[in-house]
Length: 163
Image 1 (cartoon, rainbow, N blue to C red):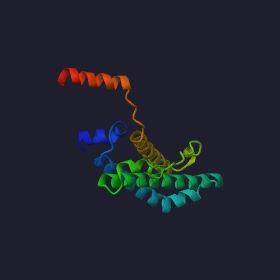
Image 2: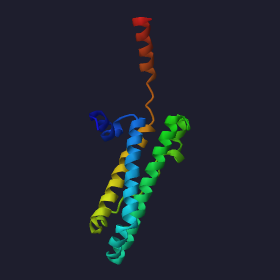
Image 3: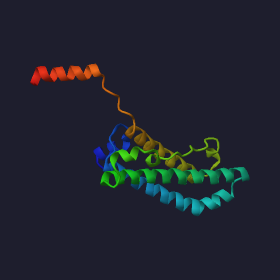
Image 4: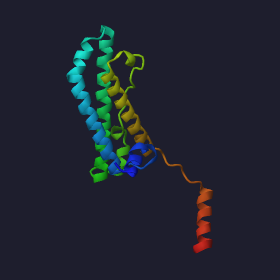
């Protein structure tokens, strides 16, 4: 991966959402979804069966949270792809239904008692969700209005300097 693409992926919150960034995040989300499905459908079932009753319930809840986070991320990224391709008008992505959906955070008290693969998937999904949430919030922050006095000064400068 080139240095510029590493910077783009690592510093999403301060950058404009680009098709390249959306593609990279989409690939990351789909890989994570595949890992989560593989774990929770096979090894995770065995791991869950070995836990005490209360932790089994917590394990099941956390696995659902992982799935919810990933699905919200994928839906948001697909919306960004649709905006970029012109299928959805740019302003329409600000509609609440097209924003990143809410996902509950992991239960920090429960995590230490869960198997390491489950902890990693929970942490990875929460991290990816947090990065995408920053992008969504930054994309839809209201732009501050320019002061009328500054606008007038700008017009005066343009008139005086270049006419």
